[in-house]
Image (cartoon, rainbow, N blue to C red; front, side, top):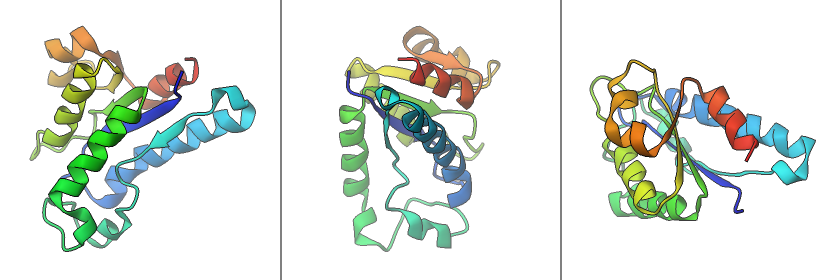
Length: 154
């Protein structure tokens, strides 16, 4: 089995730190699993990688001066990573009220169309956790740590 996980989740409307904090924790947690046993190694595909300059912004928006962050390049890279991943881990707990996180939902839809294993972290009473597409096709977890533990057991 290809042991690659893609980290989908909100960016728009968040600070760089808010968008990166949970992703960095997942990378750290999966990295410890790798140190403990090579058979548990997981490669992590993080859409925040290469976007460190966004740390200079107050909030992550949709327009960037950096030519490497043009819309087509962002979308193609993220969709490539979804195709390459064996598991998609989507954090739906930090989506700001001002944004429906369209990019994350597109990634989830694409992953489901490709029959990927999709793990979703969502508050159990949230609209996301109750939506038929999430409940019917994804494995839903209440916390990121529980989702990561399940990934490590694959």
